[in-house]
Image (tube, rainbow, N blue to C red):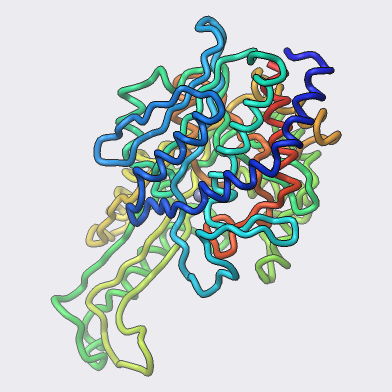
Length: 453
Ligand SMILES: [Zn+2]
């Protein structure tokens, strides 16, 4: 625990170094580390090393067989102290459609109090912000009350396909009194957000072939149609109101923690706002804000991400297609296992008479959650009260998926604290940005969290 006079000094040091933060994040963002396209990994890893070394960490680039290096930066104050791990990633999402960017995605620009650029929010911004905050504590108080490990992945945006092997080979790197996983953000009106885990995900591709080749559509009177065949199979997976019909799909789901439900009741966010944000006519879940939030958090999904068959070009072609495909993803809750869900999906299709529909597994992330009563989430709560003078919006997990489970499975509680981003950060989309005011607050909140431990 760092005393209150020093805490104020740490916050002033963060203020005084804020311009350096913006400059260094801009430099870091200039490297186009797009994992989906396998570009500039080594340069991205070296830049990550530079950011962390400049702030007192001992850095190793650890090879991942077949993948980009994992960057590990450690500050060991005393070997017997507990560890806090800060997980982020230096890779980013592809930038297309490029013509929708108002500025070059890899030439960061400050405009109207925001910094624009790919990776500013997801998650290069958190790497620089957290390292700056922690360095400020060391400069003021001399040392940290814990040891710190920065864990910076190079392919999270591609589902971290090489992390399972890496995690099995190096379990010690995942163990600590807590790990922050990337970060939650801020609401549009600046309220900080914390979540206690991530939903899981299973992504698959379905395919069906009903003939050797496409036919003249007049033959459809007597021959099968692949698109209709696939649609019939898809319709067995989910009811019209969203209930997933795969046998045993919900087996093992852990019932909601009553304490998390209490936080959810106090959470002032309302999914109804997506009506305006996305121009949809309806938001499912119920008549009250709490019911809608509960469905958002505790609902599972079976989503058709893409579907194609036959002729979809200009004009019209009267064809009876021989093949049809769909990409699907399932968002899963703690207690569900993606591999088991995959097996159940295959069995379901077979049992419903669709053994001819092929299922390929694309990627998975396990669901994960932690108790809010653990030390790290409690420290984050206290830090938010100190820095923002308000309560954060608390979620049992983020509705998206991440690498959280690699930490929770070895007993490390893994909350997502408020980070540099906000609801309008447009992560994965054109014009990704952070608001500088949020970034400044999040740096103080991370510093306060560490100082509280
Ligand atoms: Zn992302």
